[in-house]
Image (tube, rainbow, N blue to C red):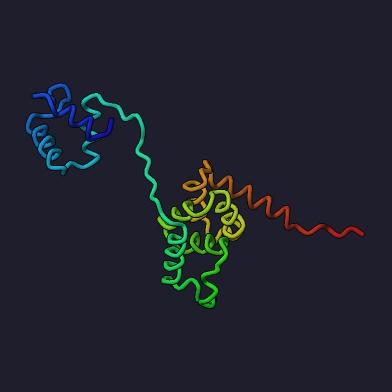
Length: 179
């Protein structure tokens, strides 16, 4: 049942508030605001929990967006921030995915980074992040920690970053000359 259906059912009997611990005047205001469609979602959830309802499934929202439109929006934001000062304008439409991902990760906000996950699989974004941002550690340390924890679900970002850097050092280490 939806939140509004549950509230409709809750508000229908008289003295609905008695078992909730909500005072009569407050209950009257809540019911009036609900009828006027002016009750905030957080308040609705609070009332239902007090009345003994349990949230069964979290609300899961996904904005339906055309990938081409979303990509154009990201490119426009990057252009507004003058990120492509070294690119020729005709080339901007044929921008490789890896470059777009890198520039968004480097220069834009969390909202736009979240939009990347609508365009590309998380594995591709993570690969670009590792190849182009983590290797620049400690320059982007704070951002790398944020991305690791928030977007890639890495529980201990500092340990992950240190291990990554140690692997990189081993890969790029020069062999000793023994003659």
